[in-house]
Length: 608
Image (cartoon, rainbow, N blue to C red):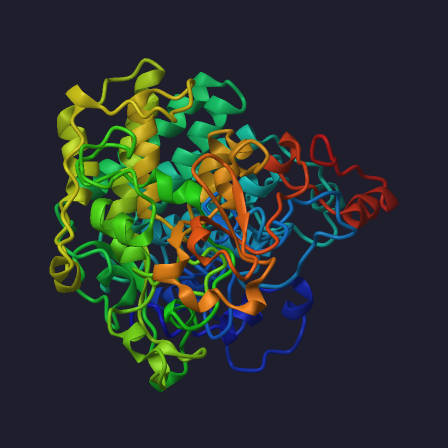
C-alpha cells in the first residue's frame, strides 16, 4: 500500500455491502466464503475505510470533510448577503445508502446511515472467525482493534450529529425486524460502547503495522483523543454528568499520553509546510497524511481555492481576527506590542501570532467575502502565479499537495484541554510542564524563510503564573481554559474543529450576529491607500465601512477619504434566529413513517 492513496475496493464492496449484493454471483473468484483467508485480505478490506475516515483534502471536486471547501460553517467565517442558516425544520428524508464520505454541512458529520457500522461489524465477525486457525493471537488482537476503531469512529460521528442513535454490535439479518427497526439508544449508552472499543484499541492495536501510514495505535490514539474530548466536554456542559465526563476525558488524556510520550513526533516543522507540501513523508509533526499523486489520478482542488485568485466565501471575520493573540502572548487589549490594537491586515501580520501570517494573505483581496483571504492550504510558491497561468498543482482540481490527516498539534491541544477540563472536575491541576509540552511547544515551531524575511516573531510562551485575563472572556470560562480554546481557534482555521468545539462547549450562541456584530465585519481597510480599485462607480451605495464608534459610512462616489474602517461585506445580514435544538440534527419524517408502517417507533430528536 502506498501511504493510503491506493484503495482497492471492488472485492471489499462485493463482500461487505448490503445483503442484496451478497446474493449476487461473484464477479471474481473471491466471495465471502473464501475471502477471509489471510492477513493480507484483512488489510485490503480495512483499506476501504481509509477514504471514508481519513479524508484529507477529499478528491477531485469533493468537499465533504475537507478543510476550507467543507468546514466553513462556524463563527469564524462570514459571507456576503445573508448568513448561512441553521436547519429550520425536520427534512422529509435523512437516510442515505451511499458509501462515500457524505455529510451534513451545518452539522459537520454524517447523515442517517449505518452502512459503515455494518462494515465494521462484518469485519469484526470475520476476524473472530479467523481467530486461531488463520490468525495468531497478536494478529487477531490487532485486526479486531482495527474493526473496533472504525466502529467507534463512525458512532462517535453519528452521536455528534444526532445524539441518541440505535447501537449495533453485530451484523443484523434482513429478517431481524425488531433489531432493524429498534428505536434510538441513549448517547451515553452508545458512547460507553465506543469507550470500550477505544480502550481495547489502545491496549491491542499494533504500534506499527509495517507501513508508518497504515493505521496503528498512535494514529488511532490521535483520533481517540479527539472523540473522547468531544464526548467528555459534551457530558459536562450539556448533560451535567460529571462521572461520564471524567471517564471520557481520562481516556482522551491517556490517548494523548501515548503519542506525546512516544517521542516519535515533534514540533519541528514550520506551520505552512504542514498544508502546502507536495510530500509530507518524514514531516516530524504529521502522524498520518493523505498522499496525492497526479500520475495515478488522485488529486484535489483545495489548493486552487487558496491561490489568491479563486473566490472564498465564507471568509474570515473580525471575530476570528480578534481571537489571535499578539506576539507577547496577550490579547490585543492588554498587549504592549506597538500597533497591536490595529486591525488592518498589515498590522495584524506584523503583531499577531505567526499563524496569522501563515494562514492569511497580507493585503486585502477582492476574491474574499471579507477581503481577508486564506492561503493556508497551498505552498508559498502557489500564489506567485496569480495573474498568469497556474501549474496543475495550483489550479482546478489537479492539486497534489499532501493533506495532514492527524497531526501532533491536535493531539497536544486535545490532551491539554482534557487535562484542564478534568482539573475543573477534581482532577490534578495543569502544570507548567503540561503547558510547555503542548501550547508552548506549538508556539515554538520554527518559522519558514518567508515569515522570517517579513520580520515575523514567535509568540511568547503561556505561563501558568501569568495567564492573561482577556476582557472579552466569558464569565463562565476560567482564564486557562479560555486561552486553551483560543489556541485551538488560531491553530485550526478552516479545519474540522471550530463548529464541533462551540457545540461541545454549549456556545452555539457565538454564531448569532445580533449579539456579536464582529461576525458581520471584516478587517480594517483604508480604501484610498490600500484598495483604491474599489472606489469606483460600480461600488456606489454598495461599499460600506464601520468606524470604531459604530458609525456606518457608505461610499457615494465622492467621499473617498472617509472610506476607512472595518469592511462591511456587501449586503451582509444576520442568519435567521435559532434555538438550542440546532445542537443536534433531526431525523427524516420518512424514516419515522417507515418505522410506523412496520409497527415500530423511531423517536424524533428532542425539540424537532
